[in-house]
Image (cartoon, rainbow, N blue to C red; front, side):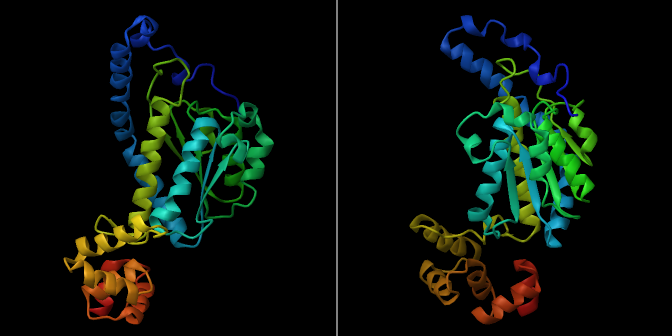
Amino acid sequence: MTTAPTEAPTEARNPRTLEIDRLPTLEILRLVNAEDATVAPAVAAVLPDLARAVDVAVDALQNGRRLHYFGAGSSGRMAVLDATELRPTYGIAPGFVVAHLAGGERAMVDAVEAAEDNEDAGAAAAGDLAAGDVAFGVTASGGTPFVGAALRAARLRGAHTVLLSANPAAPVAAHADIHLAVDTGPEVVTGSTRMKAGTAQKLVLNALSTAVMVRLGRTYSNLMTDMLATNAKLRVRQVRMLVQATGAPAEACQAALSAADGEAKVALLTLLSPADAQQARKALRAAGGVVHRALREVG
């Protein structure tokens, strides 16, 4: 049975904030801000391990496997947020990246605290993973039973396992191939892991998924080529992206986008090469969607 550590770093009292309840508003905010400033360096310390996790995820996704997040409470909500935003931002297929939140959809808006202790639910959540998939657990304390059970079940199915925690001695790390131990230390308010630990989780998940999408060819330079243009603002952004990438006038970019049936990456290739939309699609398929490679195909 997976149990929480006796005292995870996030549960310790922060000696720098002992007087926080006696301070004026501005001083409270300065304390919070000073603690927040320690998070990015803590994330920087785990970048080599994060690079390994990115490479594992890229390899899995390139080979038709999936990335699954598992979490509870604030940690799980961070994972859901990351997975949810990837589809509109990078145009990935449904089910490419999946988030499993202890307690289900209701836990996004209501605290379902007992859900994090449900090991059976954690194991069940990992029930459809297969060999080669990636199971990514997120838990501030490093001892959440739901997450531990999910990682254990995923490993038994041949999946790669990664843990993101704020506890270098996380018990759940026993089930992880890679442990991203972001040591953010005690919180401003003891045990309130939506604060520094949650900020670290947001930074790591942002970095992980962004690096994975870049490696998968979902950008050209630093431009989003695969976003889903589902509203007027995003359709304008598509045209602006094409202008920025090619230097062509907005009118020419809009025409190329129309000829490409709204597919910005296809339009981009037609603007950067002699290819028409049909040839651009074929080149992009052959290049695995990577624009630089496709340009060599049509150059």
